[in-house]
Length: 73
Image (cartoon, rainbow, N blue to C red; front, side, top):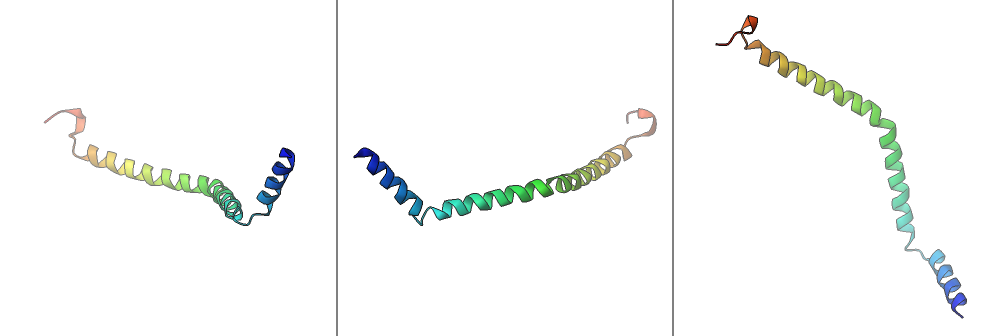
């Protein structure tokens, strides 16, 4: 008797239509993960270049106001 209820519940679970949205979300999440994995390296390389440029500019600007020879004012 219990086994037939379990089998009936499983059968109803597989034929339900409302569970399809969960599968669709899983597929969408997998696609987003694949795209991020593909483009992560070029994006990170571009960000490294931008931050290196900003760091170099800030360092050269900070050093421009210092007197030559390391003396203090």
